[in-house]
Length: 230
Image (cartoon, rainbow, N blue to C red):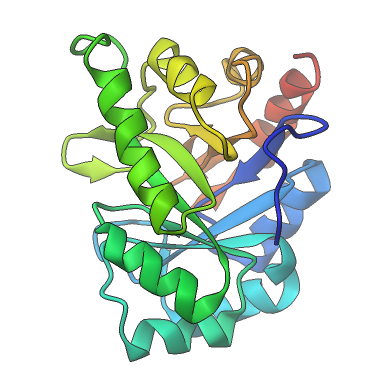
């Protein structure tokens, strides 16, 4: 899958999918991409390979496979070959060597999550340069895109906590590859998120859930209504 950095419009990725029914509902409302978390024991949205098969069988052409600090071994490569995702997303603190190995072994587009501080915490001035340098190292290893997410209370993504979007905008401005904004996006703020200059898309999970791992039709309707007003 090839992505252009400058999209004709901002894309929407609904992540943390746990059922075919929720995927169907997300796509019906306008989702461009979906995301499935694989074998992450601390995530309430994690699926096994077996449970993920129906989703990828139905929606593989638009579904990212998300992993967290996984060793690139035979089991992971077998899972990827079985599920046939459209892209991989590495959501932990994976070394650049893992990106390079997965790019070589799978030929898939790889997105690397980069975790920003929650809104209102820390100083931005020394973080932009550090974040851009980190992204460049992953790009050099084969990453074809990034997800700017939030790290909070020991969780990396899926926190429902908004990151510093001013910082995110500065980082996006320095990126030559597609970048999704994630972290705390919901129906109330999606229009604002979608106006961050240069982003490829918005990426969310908890913001459209009725409970952890279960999507809400009411929230999806509100999300896309507000998104289209952006």
